Amino acid sequence: MMTFSEKLVVLRKIKHLTQDEFASAVGVTRQAVYKWESGQSYPEVPKLLEMKQLFSISIDELLDGKSIVYYSSWMDNI
Image (cartoon, rainbow, N blue to C red; front, side, top):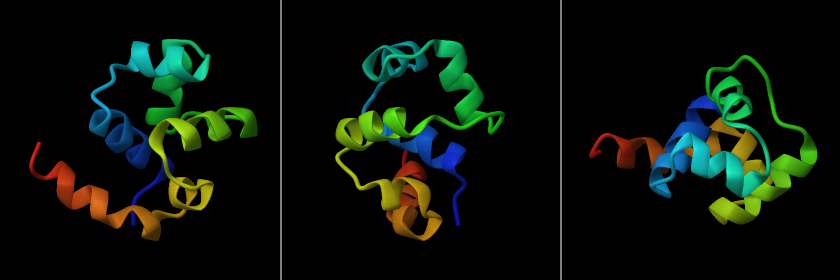
């Protein structure tokens, strides 16, 4: 099972985005992205909707650790 913060890092890397680029894409600061990826805070619902569109996945896949397992095997090859 993956945490939200782990999934966020994986999805961002799949898109080949830096934290700055990802922050710009969803309309937040790089510091906000850092906090999300380190598990210090969580995004508000409107930002989750932005991520859903950016990553082309459902909010369930974004929040449910079991739904994104296939990404973890992809990360092993990075």
